[in-house]
Image (cartoon, rainbow over all chains, first blue to last red; front, side, top):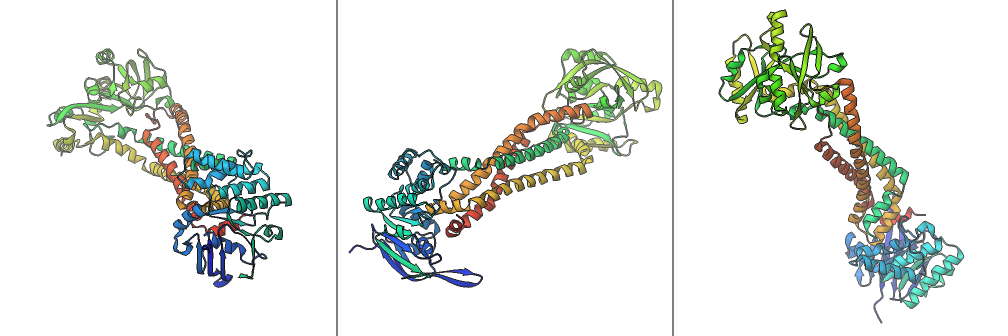
Length: 224
Length: 390
């Protein structure tokens, strides 16, 4: 059997508030295979987003080890971690997090600035990504000129444009109406099935979780 | 899409805020450059000083005259190439407002030799030397007063009684930009001959000597030799370089100049405060975006580049506008000052140093205003920044 893409071993995470340690995650162990679509579910405050942030290398555990694509994230310093994220992780956020002054095409091309690609190549890659998400005709639009569903699809295009190892999505349908949510979930499913993208998605929406092959529940910082 | 594109678009995101900040910086830079221009104008005489000229005056004060007979003694000092002299006249032309220009009775034969930067046509000089009541005026003064060659000018003496008529026989031009073109010079002999008739006890005196020396590197030695020559005489002398002489006049306005310099520094502080406020507001609003950029893999240097770039761009726009406005506004003030105070500032122009200082200040302020926002964005944890969204 192949090594898992993500290995979370006995991870503990706490935050310090007013000289008190508040535990958020306790003794989490988890593994995700390449090509898997995992949904992390749980009520608000259960630690879903914290676990996602740890897996994506944007936060560090208090204890324990996280290995993604063969790299132990704890061994990387901040700048190496930033470089690692740009190569291996594609992010999809609940509120899209697009830069409002940039067009859809420019937003999608943004992560490619960190690659050695030429301007022309960056443009071509961004165009392809936007076509994949069905927004080939909205490239010159600013985020405010798009619907919520379209904005989220632009965000997905931005997430996949560098062809990352792992897609992480934090409540990708949390700010969308039913139809738009459906479109975004269809797209994520397609990316998983057709392009074999490994996806870890945080959601508290059961309909979204249905799209995932594996569903894990978190409650008060513990995987149940 | 390059990060430069993002900088431009960010700068134009809040157009009104950016516009007001640019205007604020422009006004401050304009005020700074005007003050610097005034300070430069004050020092114009110092700047125009020649290294090969010494000024010999009465040791007690310049208000005490020296005997004209001292000239030959000074000329005999080794190292002295030529000696000329001048006497302050202090006449009123029409009224006080029209009389704010330097008027000197000078030794006609030697004056233009020791002041070669006052360029005069040979035929005009020849006429000037021939006619006892002839006068030479600077081009700027002639323009201000509407005088031309051949005009007869009547002045009422304030220090020397009676009406004095002069015929303008030439108009000099400055060889350098810093040359004062507002002087009115006429024959010392014209003044002295009339004094012999009306107040003979005041005749035979000059205000100061201008000494041209052969070797500027020996100025100290020559100055000491001149003063030694008149030690224990009835009119002891003090000889110094022309620059030191001019600086004494500047020093008389020391308090005003210091105040102006302090105001300049305050203005720089104001610009920094205006821009820092804008950048602080901007960065606070964009913390989630910085967090997103960090999530995508952009590092501290990218964030600093974007933030400092925007700050410098706004400062450069304001600085550029301020510098552009400086020229017409300075010209307006120069005209206003000429109308109100005559030749108070004979050279009132924006200097290259002032422009360079304005550009450097704009750049420095732009960079300075970005330090705190850059630090804040760099030290922001991604998780913290992302929590601010929604």
